Image (cartoon, rainbow, N blue to C red; front, top):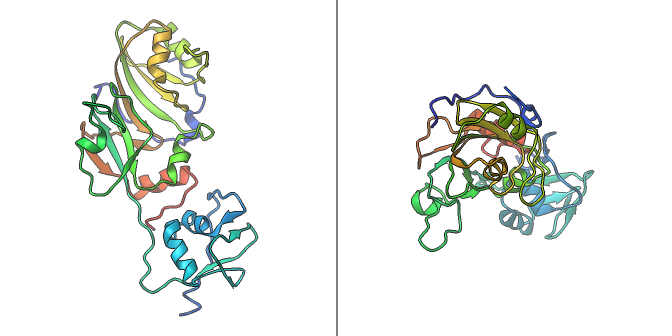
Length: 279
């Protein structure tokens, strides 16, 4: 980790968007209620509805429906039924029913390891690291980059983290091959036209020393930082991601991971308009 890097005080994701810095039976039938932050598009299939409400997976929801445990407007639901926003959904949970639990890890990917889909001779994160549970990486870091990757078994958050219509901040520490100055910082922060004609969004950039800078992006074009630097005739020598939204790399050593839980997990899921499935 670069010696000048210090974790920043946490702010809301919006703070990083465009800031440019040049410097009984009845008791067993609960109504399913959603928090205000939950985003659901209606009409929605009943099994997906129950999944988004963190009761269970869609497959387990189908089992509950087939066994007559799910009601829509006080009538037993059937497979394929759809729910409208005005409908009342009730679930008569079996005594031995346990809510779904999901797992989230923060992992420090080393240089030379690919995120997934290794080619001949390559190794992926799952190849080199044994996790207690079966998880998959959300997003990617190219083979030559290192730093923070989130891995999980919660497929619900994939689109919310990766879809460009959602604005989430990611922070990087970068070293280039020659001296940088105010002109470089100003141009990087105001937006760069890439080799495919796309112009990047304004972003926060801060110079750390002659060859290191910090950059916060709210978009994720392929190899974006490297291509931004190349457009200004700079070559990236080292690129490390140190933060995804409120999750920081912290003191994780390369190849190590830690579970994301407690307040960190609650804040992450709230920012993604999800509810905490472990509560």
